Length: 264
Figure (tube, rainbow, N blue to C red):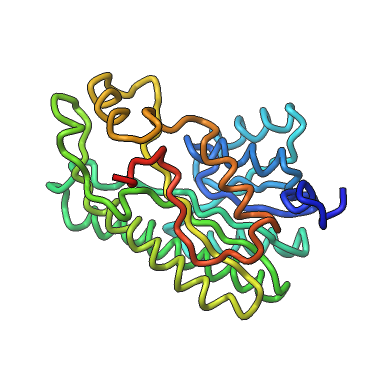
């Protein structure tokens, strides 16, 4: 398929992608989207048992998906993974920063050490893997970095949605990290733009699972333009668009994929 056609510009054939936290809720749909678009995907996580089970099932479905150990709290682990993949493949074309560690189990009442741990993993870890991969992409003079943020990076928790549920919306580190991610996306786009490397952010809204409390679901649905929460395919189109040549003149943006939640 010729890349100068519209379908061709969305193709990820012969591309190598890394997805952190790829066996999680958002990660699984991201990995499948990239692989179905033609990319060779490395799924990175600490939980190798879950990871191997997921990647094996994807390969059975005909997708070129492989496991890679990654501990975002350990700089050596990050550098070893990115350098190993770059040496093996000769190029890294796409990085999806999707992993997030929820360390503040008691929300706003959590200890300062738990906040520090979150900053180290979700902040420092994001910086190290972005710089390591971005430098490899800079050598190639091309690449796409996509950060998976959240609408909580630009909005406060709406407490009324959580009333009479056991859900905890008061997690300050999450808002802090996702808000910082949007700014870091702009910084990264500016820094690597001279090398032909792009960086964008996708901020999803709420994700429905079978464990979502009915009260929360009803209130949340009323709060969105489209009347529903996100599902297991809703961010796939945005990922493929920003990873592919179809968005070659787009960098430094934050794209809300939230059914219109932030339109109000």
